[in-house]
Image (cartoon, rainbow, N blue to C red; front, side, top):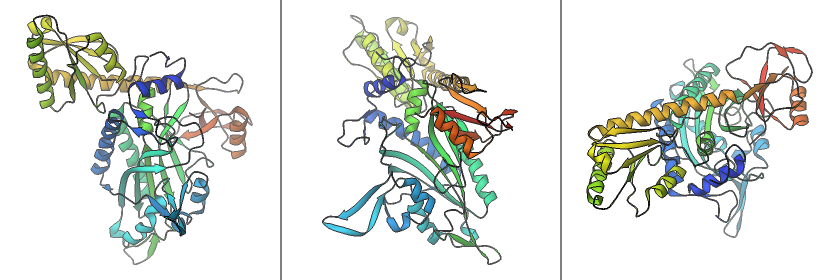
Length: 467
């Protein structure tokens, strides 16, 4: 790689995406990129873990239409105001102008909730828990960047309805558990920050942003969890009859994440040689490189195929690289693609009935016995996942700096005292070109002063320059 991750993250990132062939940005609509097989394979593996967790917690998968009538979209005032400048409109069908314009979904609250009002009748219909994995569209005006800032977004969203605010709050807590299980597989650390009133999701009672630190000191939002109270169920008339025959509005939550998870994995784990993929989502978990020399080609290839078959029989994703190229060139190619484990097999290895392995995450070398190859590789892959997750959390914690003044602001995630007033919040953002990410969802002990007005406060906030 000719760009350094630490010296120029933005250039390094674009370079990696292209060299690893994760997506192709040459499609003739800016910000609507083509998923290549390798990139899409990673995304599908992430989706697998999302589905695993949602299915296990009683959510049903649905698939709603792409288009939303303007009449439905406009029912929740804050929501339409929040998305006004970001949506695509369909105005014609063939040559005919439509009586009611259609929105190309930016997210699906307004598509789903007219149906929820038909689905929910009684308290016995609750909780209603559904999710979908679809494409959403937003007219992104900033400079686009693969996976991180695009106009067509591969998107996961769950939507739930509950009998009470307390039950909806329990759903939010369950969402955090789901998040933790998914992030363990992706090895992505995260902060849970309650967004400011002016930055919460349009129509939400409160929003918790899910943020991960990038190497340039900035935070990347990888998802969000929202508690709506009855802000949507009132305009959409989603009511249920309780056990006493009284009609009440449901309380709702949503949870969303997107293809930014791929961008986060690139940024959190990659190095100057290329990607480093967590084993659970890597399309190829181990690559076998035969080390051939005159007279031993057949013996080495035969053993390499046996190793491949044994690993595949154990359910591992394996590639035997039998291209007619030098081993060094093959090493280089698979390092760019971030394959977690390289298995080298030459005549000397065969004589020892073993393979030489090299870990992509830290370069550690060792040998594994061929008769025990499947359990050995499985153990190594789990060690790689565990080490990557631990290292990523250390970096996340190390990227935060507590500040007490606004002189010489470092290029990092900032932690500081805030009185909580919108006036001080807006002043902080406007005067320093920073974005307040919010206050910790899990309260942190703090005793200091507001960084703007100087008033004593026990409230701590986080801020970062946006990606």
